[in-house]
Image 1 (cartoon, helix red, strand yellow):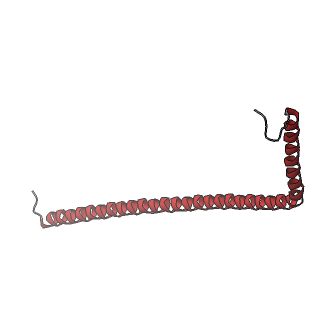
Image 2 (cartoon, helix red, strand yellow):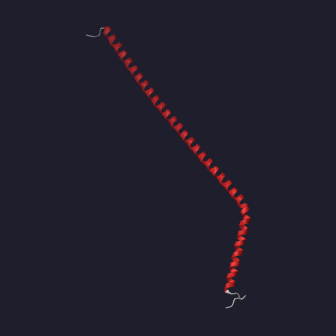
Length: 128
């Protein structure tokens, strides 16, 4: 079958090469046009990336500071809890000591009363 514009294989190859060259030239022209704005875009990208990195660093520092604050708070709470426990133990020991002293005093008073009754009985002469 004959081609409509009667072109040979070499003509078609030549036309295809010219089309590719024209397309390549259009891309190159666009690249040269964009090349002037590329430096500005790259600078803007760099600025955005730097700002992002600064925000990440600030967030990491804030997270670390918060962790340190929580750690200190937990340590203070633990110390307060231990102090309260120590105070409670001391109060129980004081109460036990007071109860022991009260019991000892009761026993001393009972013995004194018994001795007084014994002495009174002896004085009355009620013994053999």
